Length: 111
Length: 114
Image (tube, rainbow over all chains, first blue to last red; front, side, top):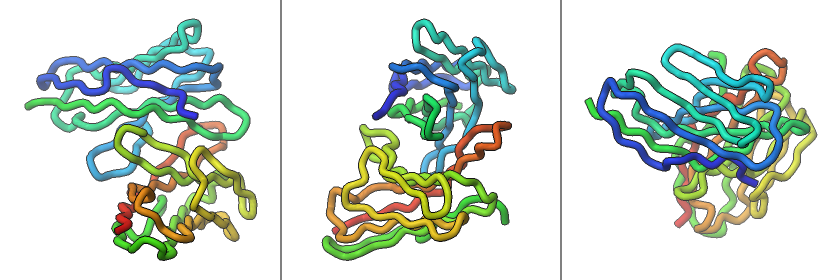
């Protein structure tokens, strides 16, 4: 069953602004991952944060994980038009190497 | 070229016909997955495979059949296509080496069932 649930579902921002997306989940996890999907393409892995980590950075991306609240956030700083995409969180509860994906969060960056 | 490929990229078929979607990966990843993506539902897992000759059902397996005779290939067959199977289908493989622990997705197959 779907675990990740992103909030908000759609976000429209100006280029240069920061974009923040949240994801909540229901069960214990080994790790949580964020993926990006450009229109008409497959998903591309962005960043993974393990259950014993609280924050992780990769370039302009910052991910936080709060296991007590079963939630994660993805921050994209200084957004660019090329960041326009759908962003999915996915949880790995372990055991069978399956990921449970959320429904996605559409981000539009206006030049 | 290394990576994961899907064919065909686009397919139009009629209700009741059998359709096979192909997936090929060059990394020798053990795990492979089939998802369908529909508006409002996100990605839903259809079937997955832990290795050659080992497959298991996901969330929405009804109406689909998979096989995995070779590590690199994981075809998905719709035995008798229905309109509700109109969707975008993604194949993925997973690096379980422990270093990246991520899934790699193919470009997708857009299937329309008339």
